[in-house]
Image (cartoon, rainbow, N blue to C red; front, side, top):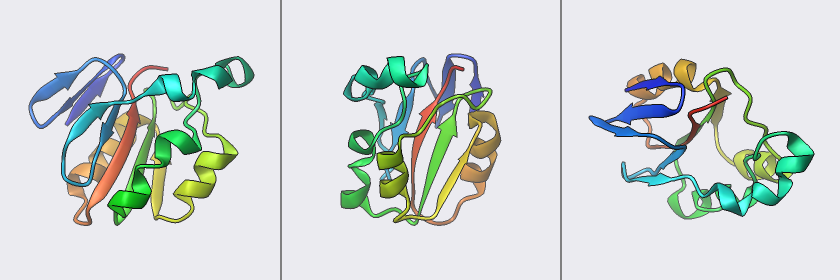
Length: 115
């Protein structure tokens, strides 16, 4: 797994947008539109409770939140409450992908690739 500003490579495929990695390994584009109405309040589109809702169905052993290349992705209080139900590792995306590669528990990840 590798990342740079505006992209991430996961399992040999390059994505040029924020991604969600599900516990079964499926990758999808982060649906930032669900949270974009809060961009003015946070300066960036924050990670919200709505975006984290998929976790309740997947019940991962750990959740990784990549906050961007320099760690600028904000989390709303609602997102923090949802994440509070799971062991969570939050940090700059380049830093946490190293941990993800070594992870043995089933995990879910929300990875921001800019900022």
